[in-house]
Image (cartoon, rainbow, N blue to C red):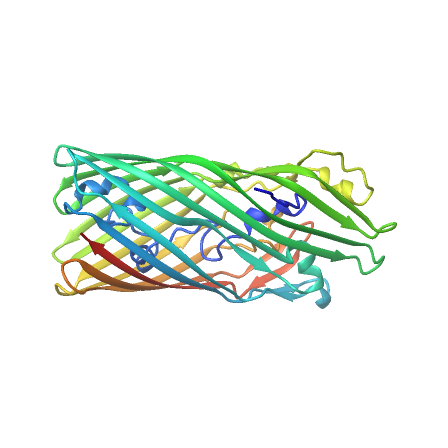
Length: 409
């Protein structure tokens, strides 16, 4: 497949992700996970266990289980106020997205269970139209779909192991345009590309008591090696364009989750800690098929440091069976940012965040259940002073509204 990649702009392509999780990761992929603020590892006891904790598939009822969900995401505008001059101020565009996900779990087959999930665990976008912010992030978008078949094996009554292979399909689109006000020198760039990469995941669940589940899951790091056709252009000292091949690699980082679920009568509490290994994101280094020697464009030959840090998230989720028809859910989480002040930019003005969520499931009959969930992510304001930015980002937040249908057959 032909790819058009502005390798210059890929310095930021994979840090344009979600505005509701550390970095560009999207933890919330199902109705239950949205309703419980991502605390859905040890307590995942529906078809979405095929993604969140495939070892839990061993504890599900002996039937085919399917779940499909649509999540609407609203990212309100982020305001940037510069300390140097109001002419550098800006406000990002409001973003709207709809993400589909599917989950499937098989009946028990000689202590084995098989699962399948299609999710979108990384991505989204950021756009700025004002002259100073758009010089760095006029438009960036990234979509990553994770196709993940899994298998679980039950060992006795209390222990289950699981693993799977992951195929990550990612596509990216961006454009940049910058003009220096003092000289009129302009630079433009554009990209439209994709790639397919492979990874793996493991999970284990222990049930020391009937009402307790202890779980550990791990998803491997996957390097997204984007490559394709490069295009760059400038008007200095005269109109000039460069078209060549190029490549760059950025990580879809590993994630470790440790979780405990405990049930007291009709209520289940899930406590989850997860660590995302963002330290894999050390820099962006570009490779070109042809040398970039133009005096303006040659600056893009240099690696761009990122130096992200591993980040922790702390989550608590609660579900309560009100009656045989209704199940209520709620959650809270705290996400640490992975982006240090020294490398933070307009592509992802990330900060620590607090997540609040609620949801409900309605059982129509023995086979069909409907679900709805809402999550609000509040991002703290962040003041930044580095080589590019000297100002404060405010008003960052996100709203997620998820609808799902579960069907057993």
